[in-house]
Amino acid sequence: MGIFAMPSLGADMEAGTLVEWLKQPGDDVRHGDIIAVVETEKGAIEVEVFEDGQIGRLLVEPGTKVPVGTALAEIVGEGASIAASAGQTAPIQTTDTQVSPQAPAPAPAAPPAALRPTPRPPAPESPGLRASPAARRLAAEREIDLAAITGTGPHGAVQRADVEAALPAEARPAAPDMGPMRRAIAGAMERSKREIPHYYLTHSVDMHAAQSWLDGFNAQHPPAQRLLMGALLMKATALALRDFPEFNGFYEQGRFTASAGIHAGLAIAIRGGGLAAPAIHDTDTLALPELMASIRDLVGRVRRGGFRSSEIADPTVTISALGDRGVEALLPVIYPPQVAILGFGTPLPRPWAVGDQLAVRPVLSVSLAADHRVSDGHRGALLLRRIDDLLQHPEDL
Image 1 (cartoon, rainbow, N blue to C red):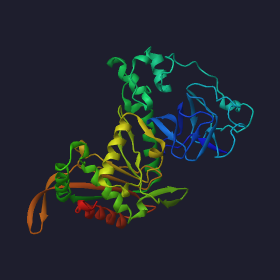
Image 2 (cartoon, helix red, strand yellow):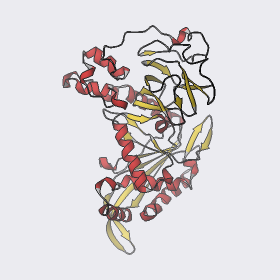
Image 3 (cartoon, rainbow, N blue to C red):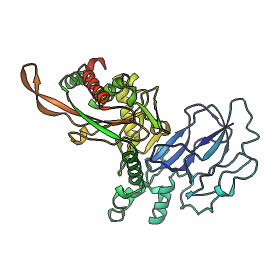
Image 4 (cartoon, rainbow, N blue to C red):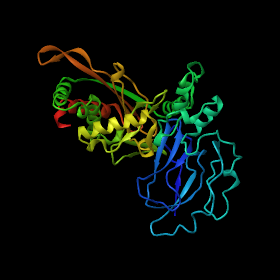
């Protein structure tokens, strides 16, 4: 029998709120099935299971806020009976409440008292209405009818941002950068700058070849199949990392472990303020049209507040591209336990030597922030040069 626990969805996550169970005791599950929705500072995240079997007992009631690592449900292995586990114990009865980090031990008795805080009555809502605990709280505080709000979360769930949008302008919460997400991001970045010995490199890339190839490709395809420059930058970075594995992995417990796969996290602004950097798995293996489709899908879901736990939990490196914001260059901060982050600005017309002639070319500033415990400037410079070389031959990406 296995335990399905509250996953860690990033270095800035300490706890999450179980919003909804999508599977019930006795349901069969397979690796990758979505079985629950969890709310964190980043929004509502669909959580996957990573083993085959059947759902046994559900150990946590929707609306419960629990620390990372807390047991949420039992997973009974294939071929095993769930009669001894399913249905014996009611889920923890609590709504919208922080609980102790102690995990419940599987037993026929009720869960430990530490996991059964005094319940508070939930905000009134229509039967069958899906809403996150934070949305219910705010709706109750502001006397808003949740049934009148269109939800943008997973399966149409109403999220806090949806309730905020329904408030009169003068009643909306001020300064989203003072909210829980901003504090979580600040905590992760504070840890990063305190613990990681950063070094920074920048490199200018002539984007004439990449832009010319991209224009030609897009001229031959309908709008839905066209590529953005970001797809070329992401693919070139992923391919370059094959030759420089010391920038792709995790530094934990005093040692670096290179990742077998290249799962590039893409920094995406979240509606209402904040940032998430979910992964596109095996980025280096995707053809450009596949990668572009993955980017569009991921950006759309993140901005609607719906992405999956596997996407947010295991990026092996992060890419931050602010070219569409007009930023010439950026010096990003590493997201622990990763050991590198690459930043891309916007291509700007610059005088550029082409052979013996001077031409005006679109020039892109690429930056690297890396962990000096794992790599050094020499290797970092070679990585940036490799990305440059790949962008000079976009037809091979």
